[in-house]
Amino acid sequence: MGSTINLASVGGLLIVLYLAVSKWFSPRPLTNIRGPPRPSSIFGNVVELQHQPDAGELEFEWISQYGEACKIAGPFGQDLLMLADPKALHRVFQASGYRYPKTHDANQAIRLMMGRGIFWAGGNDHKRHKKVMNPAFDISRLRSFLAVFQRSAARLAEKWTKEINANSNDAVIDVTTWISRLMLDNIGEAAFEHQFNAVDAGGVGELSEAFNNLFTDSLLFPDKGTILFTCLLRFIPPDILHFVEYLPGRQVHRFRQFLSVSKQAARDGIKKRAKALSCDDQNKDILSILVKRRLDEDELLSQMATIMLAGHESTAMSLSWLLYDLARNPEDQKRVRQEVSRVKAQSANPDCLSDMDFDGMTYTNAVIRETLRLHPIAFMLPRVAATDDVIPLATPITTKTGERISKIPIKKGQNLYLAVYAYNRLTQVWGDDADKWNPGRFLGNPKDKEYTMGMFADLYAASVPGGVRGCLGNVISYLSIARKRADLICRLSFFSWRFAILELQATLVGLIERFEFSPPPGIEIQGAPAGNLIPVIRGRALEGRQLPLVITPLEKSTPI
Ligand code: HEM
Image (cartoon, helix red, strand yellow):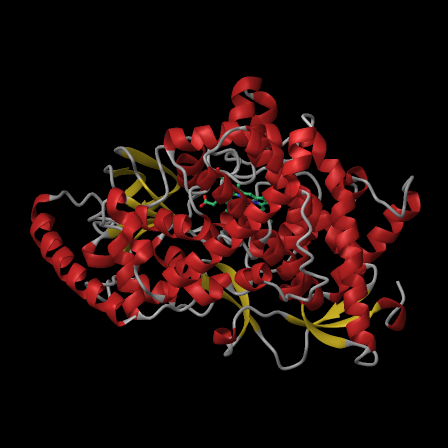
C-alpha cells in the first residue's frame, strides 16, 4: 500500500503541474453550468461521492438542486457533466453508437477484474466480441434454462428449510450471500453446462470465495490514497495502463485474485468438456461456441470470467433487493403469493411453470420492475465523449448567468457521469411518488413517453437498453430494425435481459411460495456505493455485503 501511495503522490504532483499549465490553454465549455462547490482541488467531489452512505442519494440531491444536467468536480480540476435528463441519457446511450465509450479508468478496472472480454472491449473489438458471442445467445434456448432456474430455487429452499428447522420455527438468513451462490450455479449450468455447486457447498470453494464480497472488498469506501491512485489512471495513456496490474494495492490485488481464480475455473470447465465438444458439432451452449470461434486463449478465458460475473452478480443483487422490498411491504408479498397460486391453478403444468405463465403474472412483474427502478445495481455509469457533440435536454436548465438552455455543447474528451439512480427518481418521469415503493405505477397502459429508455417499461434501472453496450437490449428496436443489424447489435442484449428476467421470476416464485420474508428488528439496510449498489447493514458496511431477513416456512406462518 505504501508504494502505491508513493507512486500516486509522484504521479499526482506531475499531473497537477501539467493541468495547472494546460488549464490556461484549454477551453472550459462547462464554465456556465451550475453544480455543487469543489471541496478539494485534487479530488473534486470524488471522495464525497465514493463515501456517501447511500449510493446515488448525493447525485439525486445535486440534480434536484441544480437541474438534471449539472457540473460536478472531477479530480485535478476536471469538470464532469452529470446527467439524469432522459433526452440526454438517450443521446449518450442509444443514439450515439460508440461515440461515448467507457472512461480509461473504468475500463482499466474492468480489465483487471474480468480480463479482455466483451465488457472491456471497445469499438471494432467490441463488434468482434459481439459477433463471436451472438450465435451462443440464441433466444430459442432461453426456455431450456427455466428448468435450471427452477431446480436451483428448489435446492436453495431445501437448504433454507434445513437451516430453519435447526433454529426451531424461523431464522435470520443473509439472503444476499445465498442468492449469489444460487445465481452462480445457474450461470455455470446455463452458460457452460458446468456445476459450480456453490449452494450445496455452502460457499466453501475457491470460486465462491473469490466472488464473495468482490465489490465491497475492492471498491467500498476506498481511502484517499486509493482514490488518488484510481484518479490518476484517467490520465495514463491506455497503452501503458496495463502495467498497473503489477502494482500493489487493495483493489488491484482483489481484482487480480478474482480474475485468476475465475480464469482457472474457466480452464477447468473447458478441460472437462473438451471431449463432448470435439464429438458433438451441434453443441450450441456459450462455451462450445466460444471455443469453436477461435478466440485467443486469454480472450476465451476472459469472456467466460465476464459471463460468470456479469451473468450472476447483477441478478443476485437485484433479487436480494426484491426480497428486501417484499419483506418491507407484506401486503405486496401476499399479493404476489396469491397471484402465483392463481396462475398455478390455471397452468397446464403447475409443477413446472412456463415463461408464458411467468409473463402472465402481472403484479409480480410490476413488483420486479419497481425493485429494479428503486435499486438500480449500476447506480451510475461513467463515459467519455469521443467527439465534440451537443447534448439535448428534455428539461431546460438555468445557467450561472440565469440563461435557460436546452442544449449543452461538449468537447471531445469531456467526462460524463450518468446518474442512473437519480434518473430513476425523477418525478417528471415516474410521478410525484417517484421516491416511494409503488409497483402499481407499472400496471395499466404505460403512458406514452417521448423517450423510450428501456425495454422493461421504460425502465432505465439496468441501463442502456438498445445501445451498443446495453445489457438489456431494446426489444422494440430488435423487432423493428433490419434483421442483420439487429442480430449484431441486440441479440446478446436481448438474450441477457430475458435471461435475467426469467431467472428473477423463476427464483422469486420458487422461494415466495415456500417462505415468508420479514425484516429483522433493529437492522437497517443501506445501498452502499461499491461499484454496484450493494446491500450492507447500516453502520456495519465494512463487514461486507449482507441482507439478513427473517425467513419463516410458509406452512408455519399465515396461510395464503
Ligand atoms: C437484473 C440483472 C442485470 C442487470 C441489472 C444488468 C445490468 C447491466 C448493465 C448496467 C450493463 C452495462 C454496463 C456498462 O455500460 O458499463 C450490463 C452489461 C452487460 N451485461 Fe448485464 N445485467 C443483468 C443481468 C445480466 C445477465 C443475466 C447477463 C448474462 C447472461 C448479463 C450480461 C451482460 C454483458 C455480457 C454485458 C456487457 C455488454 C457489452 O458491453 O456489450 N447481464 N448489464
